[in-house]
Image (tube, one colour):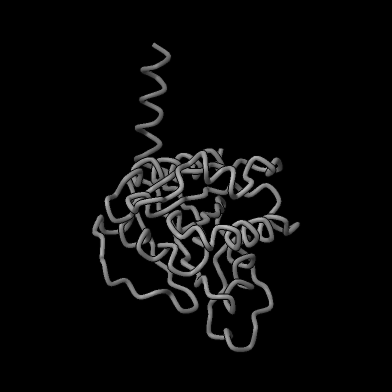
Length: 205
């Protein structure tokens, strides 16, 4: 009986309540952020993806959840923007980025950190940038989803190796989750989307 009532409430909620969340995609260049955004939005993989310069924003609607995704460039000159878009508030922007709009403030803000799991030479830099980002006081407690992309390539790190190499076990002040994915083969894209939607709901309760 209780299960039936719960399902009924969920159904009514889906009819009348629309949920919005804001997600920031960050990570070094060529990690697959823009590719992931395209796959989430259209289900299609594009081989010749042009790296994001500055930022890219798209809205993705899944059921009654709308995800506003900020895809922020991973080149060194854009990394100072990561914190601003992860915390979803206005901040001073460098003069050469004055054309960028401020992120809208949503109830649910999540960060998704992309890593090229097949580029072992950049793993250390990825770790340093991740820890520098989440050490910012303004980002305290924001959930982080770490995605090791390109698992389809030989030698790519698996989830256990990513957790070790990125020192994720040292992060104790927030929920952090790590998946090994392939945008090209669409491996684990479904559980990635499921995690995002679930956390959009839990953070609005």
